[in-house]
Image 1: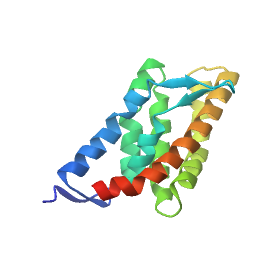
Image 2: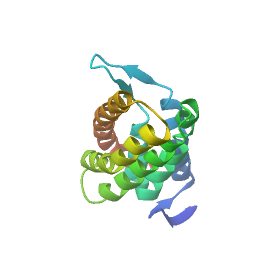
Image 3: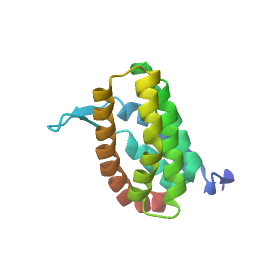
Image 4: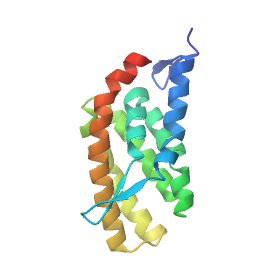
Length: 161
């Protein structure tokens, strides 16, 4: 039995709706995990769920995961602008993932997100330029890793749904 039809361009069962809810909320938990690297920046984990949501549910699923999944980090860092940045990441990943592989889609989406990240972190949040540069590199590296992992998982998750 279908719960919704064509919401976000897909059919929803109760299981599918629960998965979307988890993909929208659990990035908050993964946002609490940030590991230092020997390269001087920190490795982030939350993006994998945004990329999965974008691949499975399209632009609106990616945007929802980016929005709701960024609340913890935005509060913890006192930077609400992170939410819009991750909405952009999820939304555009969802758009591009319909046409190209997920890893490439995530990189293009990141390229669109990057001007907002730069502007909001420096001019709105008042972060120093060297810190923002480190964040940009950390997110690029994390995005490549997690988009690749998500690309490998999408077929298995779709089959499960």
